[in-house]
Each structure stands twice: as C-alpha cells, then as structure tokens.
Length: 154
Image (cartoon, rainbow, N blue to C red; front, side):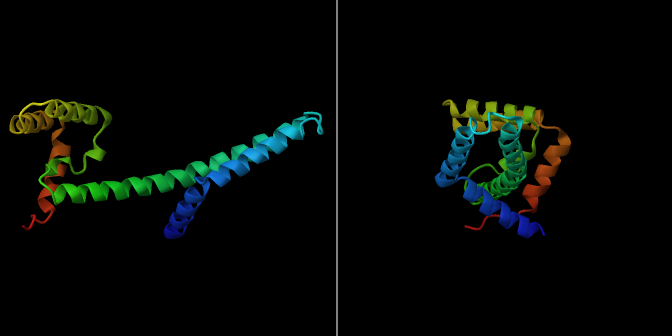
C-alpha cells in the first residue's frame, strides 16, 4: 500500500506542477466566474467553487507532502554520500535531525568559518563550539552513526 501511494503521490505532484494543469484550473475559474450572472451569483454558484477548491486543496496537501518528504530524504542520502566520499566533515551527517536552535547555531558557525578565517582554525573552532552547542545524547548518536559507517577506501 505504501509503494502504491508513493507512486501515486509522485505522479500526481509531477502532473500538478505542469503549466497545462495551471491553465486548465485558470480556465475552470474563468468559466465559473462567467457563469455568475447566469446563476445570479447564488449561494449554490459560490458553493461549487468553494467546495471544489477546498477538496482539491485538502487532498493535494497530503499528496505533495508525501512527495516532498521522499524527495528530501533522497537529497539527504545523496548529500550524506558526498560527505562520506569527500574530505568534508562527517559530523554534518544527520544534522537535519537537530532542533531549530541547534541548526541556527551550526549555520552561524559555518558562516563564521566561511568568512575568511583559516580553514584549520575555523574547523577546530566549529568542532569545539558544535560539541558544546549540541546536547550530549544527540552528539553520541551522531558519533555512533559515523563510526558505524565503513572507512573510506583510497
């Protein structure tokens, strides 16, 4: 069932993002607006567009969220692979699980390192400050994940 919904969500989100679908939706709204005088702008006339758009929006939220979540996970896996196979710091793997404050702090540290400080000094500072900023349970979990990964082969 999960795979069926995942395929369905991917197809629908791909389909919904096409310009022709936007044009069809715009045409539907224009036709609805043009029919206003015919139906004397009645409550039924208004109810048609309100009900239709509400139902479509409600269902699309779940479909698009599913597709976006899977895309995000795939991107994270690709980025993690790049980190593992490069000279980048392995401690950045899994940072998407940090809370908002921890991510802001890490972002500040990376920006500080990028502002022209020596690479070695910046990395040492980032490592020290990141360890202090992250609660020990999360730091330990990250260390276990990184040490569980096979070593790079050169």
